[in-house]
Amino acid sequence: MGKPVRLWALGALIVLAFDAVGATSARLFGFRYSILTIGTYLIYGTVCFHLGRRAGVLQAVVGGAGLGLIDATLGWAISWAIGPGRWPGGVPSPAQLLGAIVFVVVLGGALGLVTGLFGWSLRSRSVDA
Image 1 (cartoon, rainbow, N blue to C red):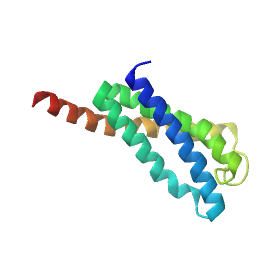
Image 2: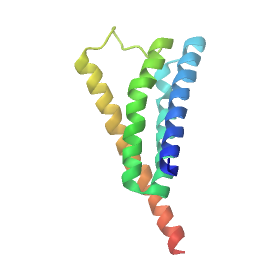
Image 3: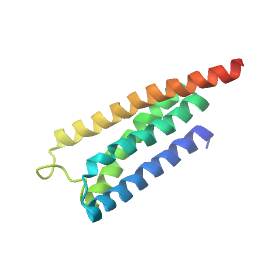
Image 4: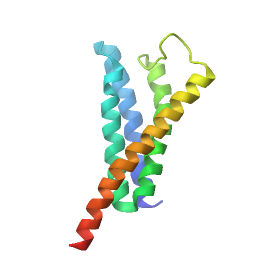
């Protein structure tokens, strides 16, 4: 397994752990779980920055989309099971569920593009210097 794949796998584990700890904390302390979204985006951005720097922008985009897929499926299942990740108003329809998953995957890819470009641009400067 190459370094970019290990980095992505580590990022996926961190996202899932963040979902579990965040959902548990929100339930115990009574705050809105949705405010932790910023932490999730910071994880995506950090992982994709390093992917962009090490493997290129395309890998960062794919990595961000992959993190989004993991977060929108397994991460959501974890937070749903704990409690605060439940869909407002009950169980989502298949179309709503698919729409939410696609949205998070596209958002992850977009974050991967932006932060991957930033990482790649810093790589280019350090190589040229």
